[in-house]
Length: 136
Image (cartoon, rainbow, N blue to C red):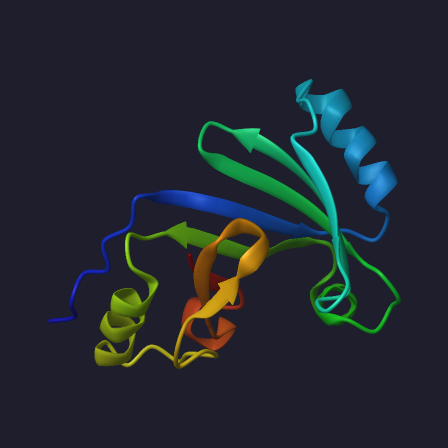
């Protein structure tokens, strides 16, 4: 029997889009949500707009230069949900559970996101039917 990974809530969901400005306008017009934050992540080649739905962030993101993972995802799958992130109490411990459960991992140890003082790690989309999954 696999070991249960305890999660607190869905931390964020990332949606890959071709045109961030248009997508932001569409989300604001459809839901009436206020933008909670915006940022560019140069190493990841993404521009992000985030909306908060309770404790969960809905992030729409576009590729900065057409060469990053968002562009590759859109070329392969079209616009849509690219990543689901689960909030956990301990990223390293969660990775241990995932390893024992034989999940296919991208990260063998947590990465550190300095801007938000959080650890995170990715589970390969092969393990989750095409969705990049993260524990954070």
